[in-house]
Length: 353
Image (cartoon, rainbow, N blue to C red; front, side, top):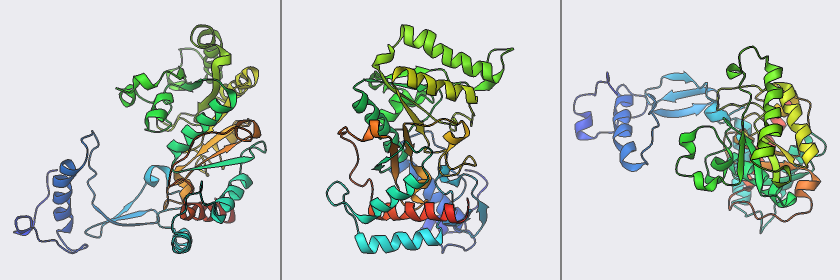
């Protein structure tokens, strides 16, 4: 970082200036840039030129009191803004009342409440079951696990340029970028990747709908013929909008074609709504723009109101009603996270967001 000046003697003596005073940003920035590479893992993340002292609503404040508009929503988690007062109060009350309970050992009322809320806003009436996780990544993996277990088939069809998380499992069936899968290729044996209709790269002279049909046809004519027999595929997972790849909206006929393929071959149709869900596309769920019903839906990010981590899977009876699946995490379905999610959904419905 260049261009910053440090108050005389401050950096040398290590004096910590009060937040909001002149020169505070320089002091905290120097400490941040020195200690980040010392304490944390080496990666290619660029340090932001802001040292945040507080956040509320859509605003961030740095240590000198300067105000910034947060256009990131913190990776789509703060759909209702940061530190929403109603969500905060309900979350604190839940922490004081419940502390932490493992849902596998001690089922609690907040998990029932959030399940009811999620089913009240489900994108399709065939979704009748709920599975709670810690994150959207866990939800995507959970949906895939349910599809594989219920079908007895080992493979998952997914798409190039799609993002489903950064765990080894999610990276295996996600295919956003080759560098994200580098050194983990050995774990991708159960994933079959198909081309996604990013329409800016469609063949010259082809319309968007024609390209959507071409991508569905490629699955039928090439992948199912040369790569994976259809009765070995448990399901197909996709993002209703390819957000991390550049916010690409697929042609509607492509999505309908996928649904038809799933029906033809007995695949589970999985909509990954971790980023597109809970109102970010103008409807409650991104899949609702295409007029098709999913069999499984993965949810995360904004579900916890930006204050608590929570993921969820919605599923139909075929996928989640009869089969035992070993899935979940210790903190998945934390009581306070369930309360935060319940209040988040209530606010969205009340305020028509």
